[in-house]
Image (cartoon, rainbow, N blue to C red):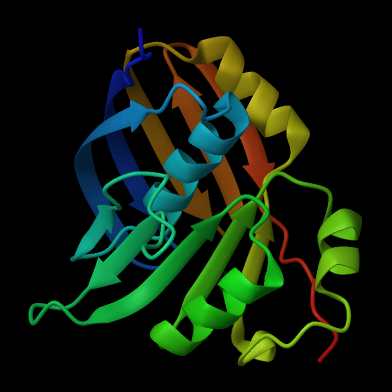
Length: 181
């Protein structure tokens, strides 16, 4: 019997002072049976930190032609491709050509990714914004992960404050230099 996805519902109060985004977001996310908690949490954080009108999750993690998270304008034109994890150089090259903006969120080791991208052709690599999710943030989130959660997320001067229940976690997602440009 095939395993089914697990549905999660997150009610996120987002106060991103750095970008001037103040929203209450109801997010329904499916975690595919093959999707790690690390990838799932990174995907949720990326969605919140990139939140703007037109943002949406793709149809599934198995669709190689779609970004995990996309931003489209009112005409349906792709304006941002948000990649998660450790995509190979060919995928980043394709994504960078398909969208005017490409962001990468990863919990993987920057050294491993940098080695994988060394000497590879990646279109507009210098314009790719790569952010690292610290291991401590992933572990904190895993400890609090439930199928229904209320999350408060505040972003000020690059510092992210996450609150679930009475517990608050402070973190930042440092910019990563992954590409030889």
